[in-house]
Length: 497
Ligand code: GLN
Image 1 (cartoon, rainbow, N blue to C red):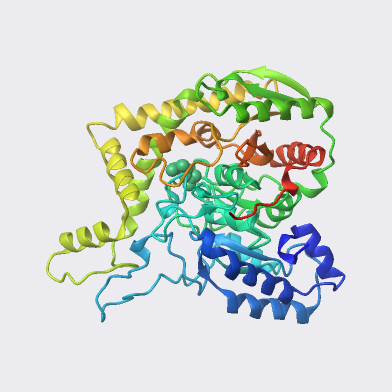
Image 2: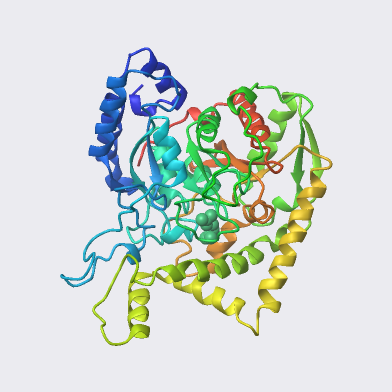
């Protein structure tokens, strides 16, 4: 097996025994990226020299006490990292078209600081190799709205890798790195993980720090890992979770020992299956794979309970009011004055803003700014924003009531496996409907993960979603790990054709 295919746990073992050096591992990943990324377009900013330098330091130090020491990873292009270009895959931070002589002309934005997460990873010796492709400022479900172009699914290059953390998911799936970081505002870790046949977890809102990660919708954004196994997710989460004084929304609820929770024991665990997550038109094999997964859990001693989450059908509509409202505020910072794209417009400030933003932002960002501004305007605030907030509470209530009966909930991640590149390009609403099973958890601020649960007839991976209670990441990790041990979906590798 090539070194790039190792899990964190396997690579750590080899590093500790000195059967492999961190430099060798980083070089193997770089070679893999050079060999296959032309097909995938997953990596958008490369920090290979910096990574090699760090790997050499780690090797010469010779201590591999922490499971992440010397392990190379890639971060979604919204994680600020000191000295490494970070652009949100938006031309507004790339400034490629500005005439010479203007500040930053032709340059990508380079942050002067680290996000809390990349800082915590750095502190334990994990090695950042660069940035992965994403929908522009994470707005999308297919990584097609990126200014760098689409990322392709390693299992079928005519399909999308999912989004918005599509670059991170494709990179992990194709063994370009050992693990990756993503963000999940409305499903952007779980959906690409499912499309690419890997594992990914969205944490409870407040469990991981958003400091230094470019915001899309601040009350919904969460950051989390994508990896090859559930054990790897547990290792990464351990290193990044917990209170951060730089993010007032993080909590000091104690962080358990996630890896110790992976006991394989789900005896007596009560697992809910919500009837609203099986809808007409969904791919029959997706439904079958979730029903099969329920049987696996039953054979492991868990108890399956039919439940109802009655407000599920309002999830997408609510999300696509609240998210654009917050987008319209968060995008205001890209004004061409403090950073990013700038134009030669000396005389009129309003026109200056207008040009910077119309040249810098792509259509999906503009659409959301307009929808959000409209929904927040004095005449429509009650009709849209306030109403959406009320429905958000009802959705949250649904989960609270369900968790009186069950410990976790299983469901599909998406109604279909990876779709063709361009399938939804002309119809934004059909793209939004991809989030049908993903937005409820977001409204409730609760954790959910995706774990591989089979392949469609076309050979595309399918994902099982396991949703947990607030702060109870360890329970969904334990359930997913037990399922993973009882199946072998995660051992399959794509052919990149
Ligand atoms: N598909 C959703 C959207 O377009 C989710 C994006 C995300 O989670 N970043 O907003």
